[in-house]
Image (cartoon, rainbow, N blue to C red; front, side, top):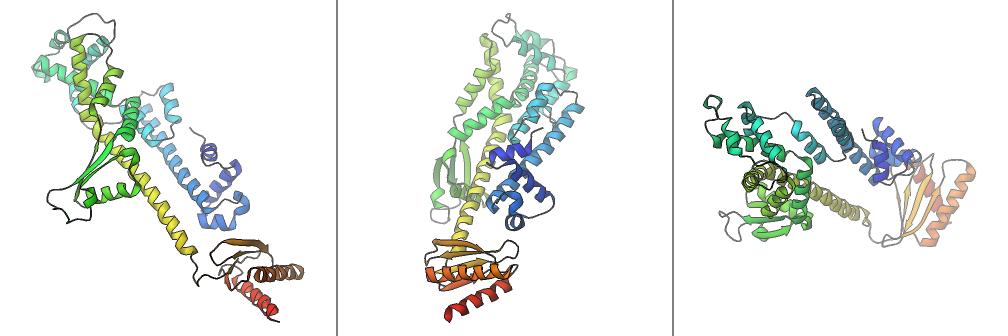
Length: 403
């Protein structure tokens, strides 16, 4: 399996000890605000943003490892686990990639391919597969299919036999991880989202007028547009589709999967590949791309909201005045920050007024100096640990300045 701490250290540009200690604290039940405020010495001064990124990615990779174990157990029980497949599964870092690898071995509901196998047509599929090489000897797939015709087995004709073999081959193609990854990337980079307002909503009657005839590349869609499209679709106002050049995808599949020079067989395989994409791959891959874009839009929107909230919280609550902010504390001292009337940082000091008499005197001189140097008009003191004691200390300093 993957080394989660090493991956986190590399991806998030953190030192190994920071990752290790932060994960230990999470395992002990510590919260992000608690760790950021009271365990800085253990995490190497990691802030809340870094800790949340670490927690989110750790949760993702932990879930991924749990899923890997379940998949490996499932494939092992089927007796189909090879060393190569095991190595590929264990090295996965993305859930989509992992599920693509598992798809051929995943217990399936009853499908057309399942029915074809039950009717004994897997042998015909293997015969056609063996012919799909450049130097294969000429052979008639119809003649071979005739051997499988048996009304009592549900195969009343050559056409039915070939259709069943095609269903088997189509399902196998649809489950190839490398093909799915390539098509998914193509949809992400070359596809477009298009939307229209449904006919029952006349012009000017909805809040989605700008999406009445809307088109944008998948890779270029703005987060707010993506979320608006999903809202409009959910509310039943918009019809949203992901469009792309399907002929390009079919051409890609043909180039990868058709190797025979026999024109008759090429035609059969071409029809099979079109069926594989349109019936078995298109819907799921489009859904995966839409979900990924939605998740990215959610993350971007949260970041925007966070930035806007930060600006709101940092706005001057008492007007534009030079301000001194103090974060009180006993063991680690009090953090004092001087800001000008616009909120610009002027000076930062750590004072220790709740220790020895000497430290208290030095803290008083430092604080008085900051007040006088920057013309402080407002002092804000946090109401956490040592808040009351710090308030009393500041009152003493202000009284001394008035003398």
